[in-house]
Image 1: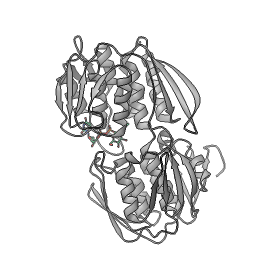
Image 2: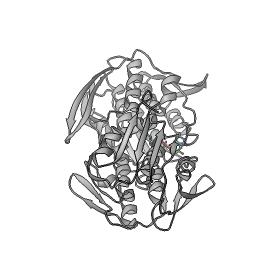
Image 3: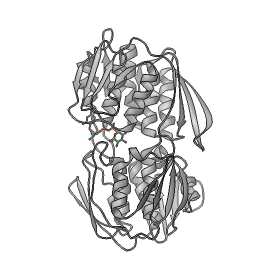
Image 4: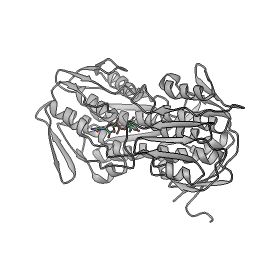
Length: 432
Ligand code: UD1
């Protein structure tokens, strides 16, 4: 397995181009299942999660074409998707096991074909992550759901029926799935307590461009007037706020200065406020964000994860890493997932001072120095937190299980090297 080797201590300086958002792209790809015409997605990131989703759609009968493109001054992918007629309505275990977001095929297939069989995703490294909210909403829309042999068997006679759904908890996945189901349902659907993450707005905008009638985009109440048929469309994926936030931390932790080109400040208000409160200078331009921590003495600040527009759970591990060498103590509270401090034991091996309390909170006390070590993480964002710690640690840090990073960070080493990091990928069959 590949590893990432980092020699810490470099002050990062320069420009990083932010890629298209993985978590927007995954439901957008599945929205293409709602029509027999072509959906073209531009500004797509080259990531293993995207390839995994593409493989699943090909298995369902979608024809996919891939092009190398250049969007907003950086290399990106353009993909076109056409599902003239699905040849399978089954999302098998092997696909869902590799990528939970495979569950995004459920809403579209049920809406267009009245049937879908989806391997029920199990738990994952950060928690149990059930699908009860998705399934209860689909049942309310008239679907019959059965769990058998590890699969969700969903079907509906005729079309799904519009319904007034009040989600019992805020779920990004359930909001996207039910939104995709509702656009082809009969009559009006109202989704209350919907998640407001920017990726959902991106999905709703594509669906409207396909002929859907969605109102309330960006709010907790979405109103959808179902239509009989959707058509083709072309759509540019929004910038990845989590990638942007991760590199913002890379600038801050190395006391450097990075311009994040294409980053959208409005999608990052809470994390940017935390950076400012810690003593980092943040400048917004029309097309970028400038994160400047040169000569700054950073002070630890408490963070608590919440649904958007609160502090994103997907930036918790990276900001926890940032607190490691800041002055004073910071309390990090995780409210979205029950098991999201798996990076802590690895950071302790690098000399961090962290106390985890139960599953929900951790106290970080700033230390003067971290030291390089062999580390590995169990999920994508936690892996990036280890890279961040490696960037400031004395000596060499080797991050194992790089496949986690490849799921969500496009050309990671290249981007970090371009701002001065001493980082390289060691291939499985090379040296040592
Ligand atoms: C998405 C993101 C993930 C992010 C998360 C929260 C994608 C591909 N993934 O995941 O990166 O960390 O949002 O912002 O976009 N829950 C239930 N029942 C359900 C659904 C969810 O109990 O039916 C719980 C989950 O276990 C979790 C919480 O609700 O504790 C939030 O989960 P959710 O917003 O659904 O996360 P995902 O969509 O899976």
